[in-house]
Image 1 (cartoon, rainbow, N blue to C red):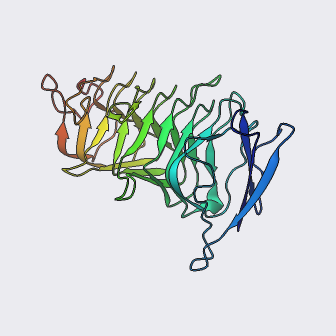
Image 2 (image 1 turned 120 degrees about the horizontal axis):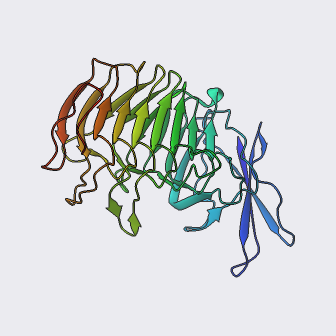
Length: 303
């Protein structure tokens, strides 16, 4: 069972929120004075192993934790209505956003925006984690650059939202890589725009590092489709960087340096760079006309 406490100071004043887990304690500290607390206890009778937190913050409001959030250690599902924002601008220079630890296997996050954390926006150490239609924006800007999404030991599927709101997961503006897979973790990207693309008022900026990187026993697969290819562009490094020790991957329906609206935004480095690693398979790769297909060596083409 999850309990969420929300506090506010009225329409004209700033708002802050407290999240409490049954086992985790406070997720935000230092509430201001003159607050009115409302506590919500939300469970799903049909599946008592999952907790659902639905639409508890009005559309467009942000939760702004005043210190680092503790790791999530139980299986949870954030299935939310409307725009839900977790803003880390006041959480501390190296604080991560949402951290899914080993005990949180099977968790799912739908349509949540995680932004402005000094550390990673998401840090995944749990197996079978799903990010669906999320926005991961302007994270990793602490003393040491961090990725937007860091996958360590666990596994994650990055995909679009439900059929009622099917936009992809967006990852942009990270001071490090957009998505980094390390330490034996694995990531499967099914629908995502990484550093490139526009959706309504959202115009993604590139990630300062690589768009996606994999190393140290990590595994990466891209499973786009003809209608919704995965798009990666605008990176300060390579679009995809596959480092030594990475497991073989399959890359299908992938656009490098180009968006569906024919927006061309090359990566500063190679489109795909494969370093001392083999066994990868690429199918339906699209890049700007000036580019050539990726090479399985140290000098893949720029696209």
